Image 1 (tube, rainbow, N blue to C red):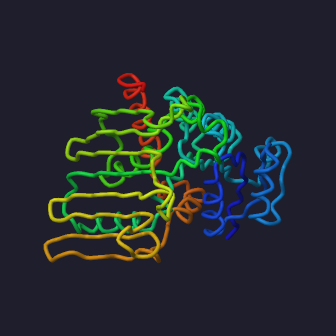
Image 2 (image 1 turned 90 degrees about the vertical axis):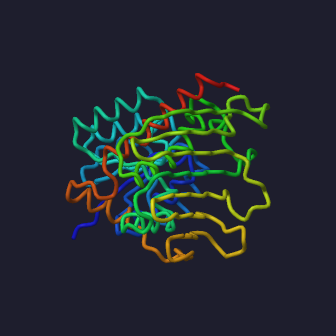
Length: 337
């Protein structure tokens, strides 16, 4: 079977390394990459030895042998690039956020519908986290009955001195709910098997970084479907002493049990990440999810070949960003501190 061929355009966030590895591990072929920043290009070329750096992105977009374009460009540049790539006949996989305004979302949706290309956002806190994947399997199998509430927490370490200028520019990164909480918005839709949710309340603030007025260092969303309530909390307050960039957590309450996922670290002492705790009628169960397979990469390649939607339904991909963008809009209307 002929491998899916892909190229990279825009490597401004280091999630591009995970995106690339995800596809290579699934059997895709990396053809080349385009980046205007010499330092970022050098690191990418060193990591993926032998990949050619292409001086003009049009050479990649116009190459008929390339099936897929991936990108972790500066967030406000991702939607225009995706539109350009889809119009050139390519499928697209970008880092989150896929776009930073509702206007960009509408334009991407329009072009995706017109071209029939795949537009996918690699929500890594779901698709690259084995414990979250396992939680999906357990919920689908009825391990906790019907889902009634979900709470997702996405704390991150700021490491301000290592961040590029655009990281502190609200119009470029989209705001904290768009930038980070889109992860949790997608997971809420996934675990509730929904393509829409109502934002009941949202707030953002800058609590401890007055020297960077464009930065939002904390944010919350309260959301719901007809049957499930949700809460999302994200921030940039992970302490330096934590042996991870953030203590990501997911709580799923069902009618017959509950799941807690500790995505990156167990502060009680177990090594590594990918910890899952299930409480049901029989007792408390611990799952070490370190070896749970991650299906997203292979599913996306199959979708490219077969024009299917097994990796993530297109509607959910867009809906997750729509919820995050609307929550950001609501939060900034209520609170701009």
